[in-house]
Length: 60
Image 1 (cartoon, rainbow, N blue to C red):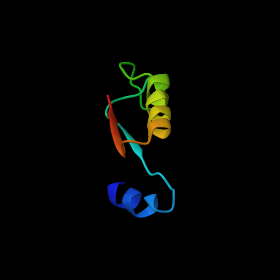
Image 2: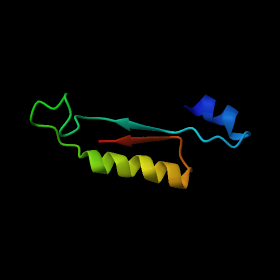
Image 3: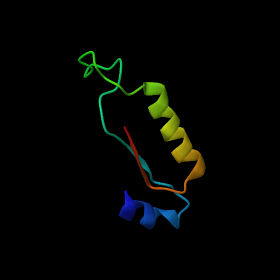
């Protein structure tokens, strides 16, 4: 993400990622004890998109 983002930044293209470190509630991978809320993860993506100050955010 860092290298790609640096290369495309000159063209006005932003590259970023949210790394999800855990199980997300309500997904096929949730064994019933997941702790991460999908809405909170979505908020992280949206904030990353709006601010565009970081290339990578870890969630969880």
